[in-house]
Amino acid sequence: MNKEVLDQWIARSFERDRRATAKLISWVEDDIERAHIMRSVLKETGRKMVVGITGPPGAGKSSLVEALTKLYRARDERVGIVAVDPSSPYTGGAILGDRIRMQAHGTDRDVFIRSMGTRGHLGGVTRSTSDVLRILEGGGYGRLLLETVGVGQSELEIMQMADTVVVVLNPGTGDGIQAIKAGIMEVADVFVVNKADLPGAERMKNDIEMMLNLNGDTRPWRPPVVLTSVITETGVESLYEKIEAHQCYMLESGQRDERRKERLRQEVWRHWEDKMRAVYETVWEEAREERVILHQDDPYQLAQMLWEERFKGG
Image 1 (cartoon, rainbow, N blue to C red):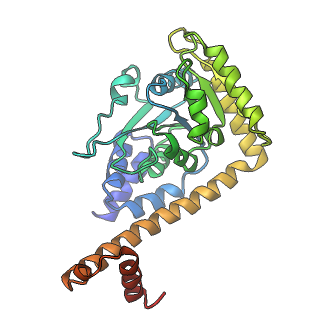
Image 2 (cartoon, rainbow, N blue to C red):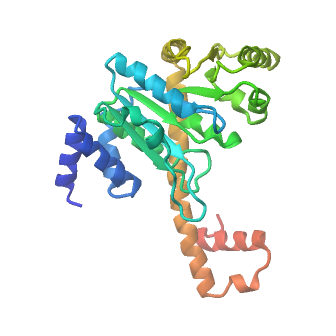
Image 3 (tube, rainbow, N blue to C red):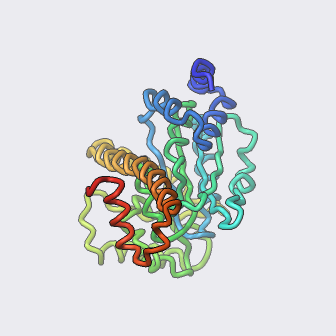
């Protein structure tokens, strides 16, 4: 693609051209001039904080994202949403149901909803997610929301994308106990007991607070537990306040910079991983052509042999 034309699209996105922003996202997802686009975008972004919404399937994450979006829009803030859906292991496609569930904002030009499939990548996020969030920031969306699929332990990867992590749970389903098993206690900056109009909400709130005490959590920020109900339209304002409080804490304590340093380390590793995978595929094909693998049943020995041949005994 002509770099001059591409730069024009980038400039249009910075001027809040919604179509240009969508174009850049599509090109990055398809790995078309990705490095050039992101170098330009990175110069203009990195100031806005990302709120990650995570939790088990059916917890009401999408409904909560919609309620938060409504609240932000009432304050005349532009909202960018990245919603990650699981891809089919057979076709690679995704249902992308968030487009259906968030129809209330479908015609709002100041709300941008991007649904993405995981494409087999564990962790509930795709390799393009962080880039898409930056493009949305560059496009003038000041509130950035990331909703991930509920896949248990691999939800930990959301920490690499979000500055504030909101874990959504439901009463009466045992999710509070499951949260510890999945390691979510360490991920959460804010807990939400959603569907608080159902029986057992207060008990679950108390259970989560008790588990925080039992874990001996000595971090300066203690995750608050908020009761919300989209049905009765309660608790969303309180959630908003807790998110704001956490983001203030992150800025004042310097924790945002520390979390972003770790995010950079992980992003660099993912790029290395892509490069190493490409090298491996080349080495493997060469080995197949030379019929080396036909005489090796030991994967450990074969891995060492191919590594030494490629990297000269490294």
